[in-house]
Length: 329
Image 1: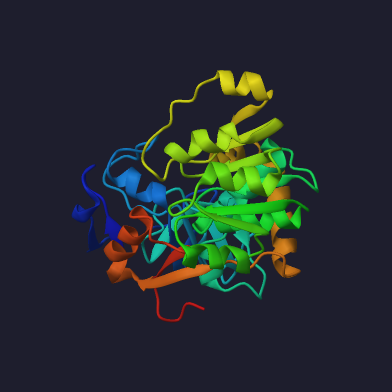
Image 2: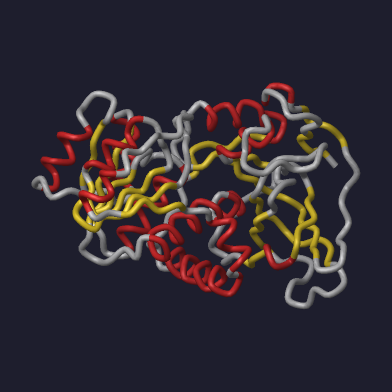
């Protein structure tokens, strides 16, 4: 089978598409014929050795994929060959087949395409866990989403609206903000051409926002933190800007606010039952039309480098997907 292979931690330009042995299912595993795999920002960090975890070398990047079960290992009773599924693979998603623990594999509705499913799990599950479990978001509260047109940003808009919140979306271009409005944002701020601080002050009447959803980091973080309402919660999702901010902790004291880390993967591993219940709720919201996965671009597997560059250079609008087989739908 074909797969992208990382043989050493190095600039992502050194990744290569290669022919490798197809996997087999060990006990508790299934093998998927991958139809589509998602590109995530941390994939680029991982292959360069800059992520918080380092896989054993060599490895194939790609933490989420969707496709069809083709082999079931011993001890797996609830999945059968032919099932349409999505999977949190951890690694291996940039390949035509992948072996994955059955506990990380979930059936998908008939109405969900493989391309939608490939980009669904990490972004939607992260935003759902962040807003529901970590922030305790309540109907009527105001949420600021930074980097709002990116993969997780759009899901945060949709989920916050589904939970009854008012959403302010912040992004770097008017084109991106138009997408945010299409996905349900009530208000928007262009923080490249405008003033984020002044915009938030005007849109909240000086009160501030209840929740900040922050996958960006960099200078926008402190500005957002300073514009939290009393008892506000700032969710730390990631650092797409590249810089990890140094936060003046007195801001938390003065606003009686909270800075909250969000790591969905660790939560899902430690709390499989709660994670499964969250995913079931997300699938219900997908089926009732509340969630509409936004696929920004789809690339064939042999154009993986171009697809990864789009994400790493923050040019993505929605999820970027690799299509492994021409039959993906």
